Image (cartoon, rainbow, N blue to C red):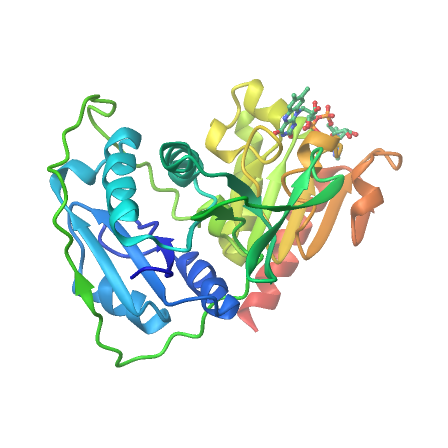
Length: 326
Ligand SMILES: Cc1cc2nc3c(=O)[nH]c(=O)nc-3n(C[C@H](O)[C@H](O)[C@H](O)COP(=O)(O)OP(=O)(O)OC[C@H]3O[C@@H](n4cnc5c(N)ncnc54)[C@H](O)[C@@H]3O)c2cc1C
């Protein structure tokens, strides 16, 4: 519908929207600047997924269902959503900060010849125009930005915006738009294998335990994984650990890695370089364990332990286990 706020669906590739969609739809609803609609590009949507989107408050779901939409290809998604946007004139287009939407929404904004506000931590309306707040200079400053013309395209940082309260029983209104048949020009993914650790995904986790160069080697991350399993946390890493090949890049937290904002961040053997802080400084509670009392991470930590992590982690895991069993 013209004047609507579109929320681009990030799904788990099994036919269900990801948890972060509650935040995107919740924020679009809170703005109250127009009908809130979901746009879902997938090769296979599930009924449960459609119901979930409706339950979160999407008054309409634009369902673009075609084998060409999965796996994600930037040029295919951009062509389809740009065509739909030109026909339907949405007021805003929002998506969560995830690997693919970080790539897709700038492409879409460029195609529509409008601006993009990336990694927003707040949105507000000022005289009927959207104003976005986003961190700049590795999180040292917050900039308020606006658009000279719409649609307003923005990505929202996960775990910052209040999620929509899900309501059962809403019937989804699904529209399958007639668009030009998607034609993939590039073949990027031959085969996809997901190695499951059984731990939550870094960007979605409410608790993150992160290990830096102080972990001394890849084999020692097992002690962090043991702790993570006890408290349902994701395991992250500093760039030093990733550059050393100890952890995959998708686990990197910071300016050139993931931006996270969990309820609890615990850093072990992480010095707290500005580029690392850029990716986690908005965590609600920060705990740091470092044997150097001068480590910069202590400046932003809510709780700090000056000690050898190899002594602290096993003790902490034992105590957390006891707490969780209560
Ligand atoms: C353009 C650019 C982009 C960057 N992007 C990122 C990014 O996205 N993410 C990122 O993390 N970094 C990034 N960096 C790198 C960043 O500047 C730091 O080099 C990096 O964060 C350091 O990682 P670290 O804290 O693990 O290692 P170090 O700085 O070497 O710190 C290791 C810490 O472990 C402590 N330690 C050692 N042994 C123990 C022990 N047994 N018990 C307890 N503590 C111990 C030490 O006291 C030290 O404080 C970037 C740099 C640049 C220039």
